Image 1 (cartoon, rainbow, N blue to C red):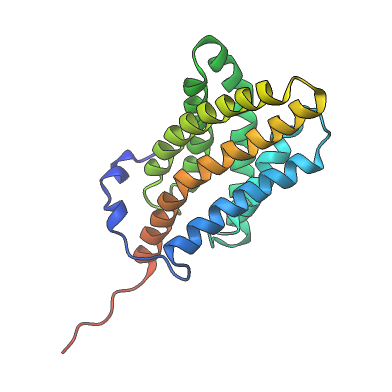
Image 2 (cartoon, rainbow, N blue to C red; image 1 turned 120 degrees about the vertical axis):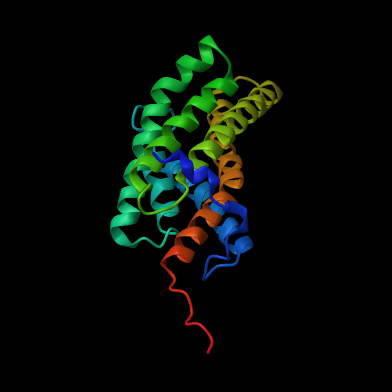
Length: 205
């Protein structure tokens, strides 16, 4: 990955048509949470080995539809996201157990963002920014999500229904926090891509 892309004027990029920034960010967060919610509804009540596959695929599909990279781009974003979520679900609990929840979330962000960045570094300029913000959002969302889950669990008791409900809400909240933190960065990255592909106007005579 070309980390010299960190020098790009990320937050000075022109607006990315056809969405305004607030609309893109709202859709990015909404579709991310929707994908997570649909995934949690479609799988059995108790978490299984297929949970990361379903969540990663659902979230990746809805996010990929906003990148405007065609059907192949949507499919590749979906697969990259699913692979990242699956791998991070294997590594993150181990890191969290031996270190901290925040560190576990950061490692998960490295895995998910790194895979997405490697797959799209030639199509979306500045993907090093994406990896960086995924690390930060992973640490914040993982730490906050599990803290809220612990508080809710203590409040409602350790019943089976309560644990399932609290767990589902916490997972959706983690994805929502992460999407909120990454939405504007993705918007600006797509703005850079659009600016690179848009030809300059002819000089005035």
